[in-house]
Length: 395
Image (cartoon, rainbow, N blue to C red):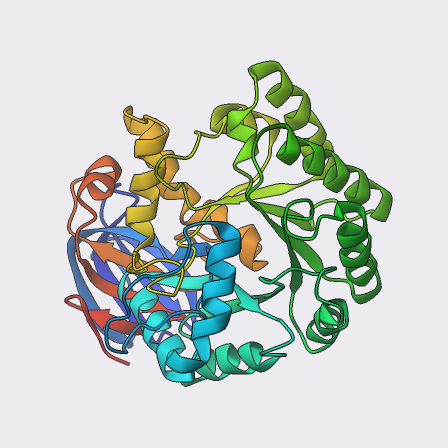
């Protein structure tokens, strides 16, 4: 039975339609004014409609959102930030269910209805972060679907016992396990990758590796990851996050690696940070290498930046890569919506019958206008429920 009818909206900026929603799914999309049914009617006022955003790379357990301002400190290197976070997180109650709920609410307010979040797993916190994130997601009653990557922020081989924790995390439902800079953090890339892939094969989970190392050091680790992926038969289940080296390599070296990434079914997650080297995104797209966008951390001990708005992340991707044509600007939005579906194990994400009813309304002329201005989300429907109206959360 129809539970909600969203009238007079423009999917992707096209002609107005009515969207009938039942049991949390889009039941029908018909010309505006023709939807039947007795469900609640919400006037879309001719607003542009997008699918819910997907945050393909988040750290919702790390944030101090909702707490008093925490001034940034610590050495501005990967190792320095890890050490600073480990020294300071208990003081700020990290991980905190309240702060994680606050972050997920900001995601929702900006239209994000699904996220893949890396959750710290280490000798100090154990699996507590996973419990915290699950409690926070449950508090929002599934409005934001949350997938968990068990993430060894402090290293793997250099911290004996972390592999066992990653194995336990996979056993209790983490959909992927993570790694981090096998060369520069652990200084034993073969051992780290052997340990991660053994768990992934045995537990049937994916792998998502943070790789900050640049240049040929990064490329060397790409080759190791490609080789292990093929030998393990984990095509389609491995993601490289950040992967800054790819944009730094000569064009011919990039081209050779892209063919290998495509053969191995390896995907890419980026937060499009300023001052990083642009990715060869056109060639990646042409090779069929999936790209997901994410926020990374938000107001945490690594950085005070971030507000959870994936439309602004898509704009950052467009700026970094110099996108200007309407088609390219629309592509940036699709990276943050439909193209993100695979990162949260959805078969699809769009404004079509059968899809989960995740719909974002905003006042924009078309997709390029929406990207350039990132206007307030006028309404957000998550799983068939109206959760944001006039920019304000209802849950």
